[in-house]
Length: 333
Image (cartoon, rainbow, N blue to C red; front, top):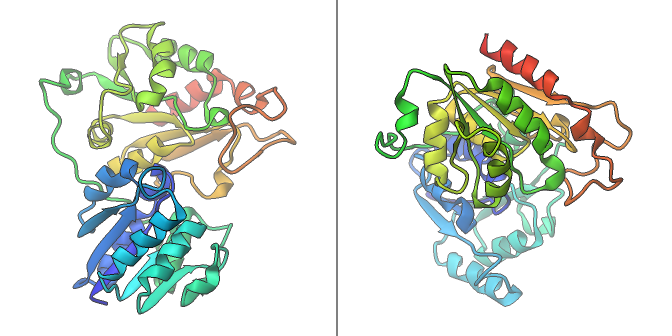
């Protein structure tokens, strides 16, 4: 296999969880040229993988949004003459691109849209972790047995001028209270409570998030201005570099938990409307999950919702801050 393309155009967290597959492909075909097709929002993280030779950006919400543009995009990629295309992503648009590329071999899941397009179809296993699911596309029993491969993301050293608070002797705890989905977000007032209890002279709290998380993070910061609020002020590589220097990350079921896996630090992931059984949980020996599961309505969807479908949000409110604080104390002891 001289030239291989891997396609993942889902959310950032999905992209991070595809990097172990990239690493396994490069190990299996060490002399191959590995290309990675992803969205603009995930290109920076993809380019930071030492196993990817070329990142190809597919702007499915912009210039490549139409069906015609997607077909043209696929036909342009056909000139690369890929020997193998691997796609963990299961969308119609992805299948269309695979069809246009017309590679010698293509591998996808049996539950993918237009799955007949792929020359090899692998059973999609709901009971697998996402990393293990992705690795199953290589049909290697040994990989499935030793599936806990951690994503590698290269980062530059933090600037002491830009991030002076990262160079002190204080214990550093990062909080990432945001998520694309509202029902994945642990209640703000609970985050405020937790931050207030954690804020001590020997501890530096750091709020992390995208520009979209700025309002949530500011609501926590406003209760205690000693917290460093970096929401919307760092790019993904800076965020990962910051996490590498932290003692612990506390976050929702969202992309930061996967960045922390790459950073190799302790993680506590809070599950509101979703559950770890979906296969997107942190899987290191230094990671922990918290979830209130004694609810008939939970889980209410794999991605979450813009608001609670039954207007109670008990999955968030019944997981009390005291429970989270106890887990934090246990994790740091």
